[in-house]
Length: 114
Length: 114
Image 1 (cartoon, rainbow over the protein chains, first blue to last red):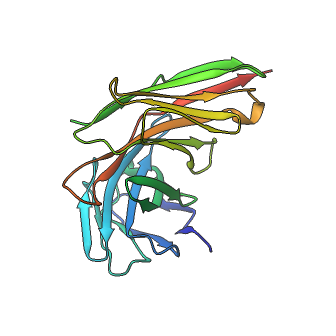
Image 2: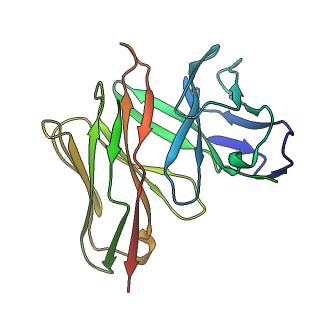
C-alpha cells in the first residue's frame, strides 16, 4: 500500500495563477480531507469529503475548490493564487471504525505564491 | 462552536516525564485523538480515547475525562527524538451518522533538552 500520496511536493506560483494539488489514497477510505498549515500554526481544514460525489466546506474554504469523482482521488484546486495561500497543504484519508477515526496524512505540498 | 485548547509550548529534559493537556468544546463527542508531527514532516497518529481513563502505548499514554471535557498525552522517559509538535483532535458531529469533520487543536511544541 502506498497510503496517501500527494503531488507535487513543492510548487511556486505567481499571483493569479491556478493549479491543482493532487491527492490519492489506496486504502478505500470514504472520508478524505485537505488541511493547510502555516508556520507555527495548527492544521486548518479547507474542505472534506465523506464519499465519492460528496464534499463540504471546512474552516477556510475560500479560494479553493474540490471534487470527489472516485473514492481514491481528492484533488484541491486553487482558483486564482494569492500570497496568502502560501502554506503547506496536507491531504488526509481517514479510517473510521465505529466512532474511532484514524487519519493518515500525505507528505504535504509546500506552496509558495509570489 | 467547536474548539480545542492546548498549551503552545512545553520544554522538558531528556529522561523526564511531560504531560500535554487538551480541553475541548464540541457539539458532539466521539473520542479524543493525538497526533505527532516532526518539523517538516506530516502528522502521524499516536493514540485515541473514546472512554474515560488511561490508554497506554509504550512510553506514551493518553487520558480522557469526558465529564471534564479534558484529556492529556503523557510522554515518559523522554528522548531527543520526541521533540515535535503534538495535536489533539476531536470529531465534530455535523449530523447523525458516520460523518462530521475532524477538528485539530493548535498544537503543542515539545522541546526536549539534553
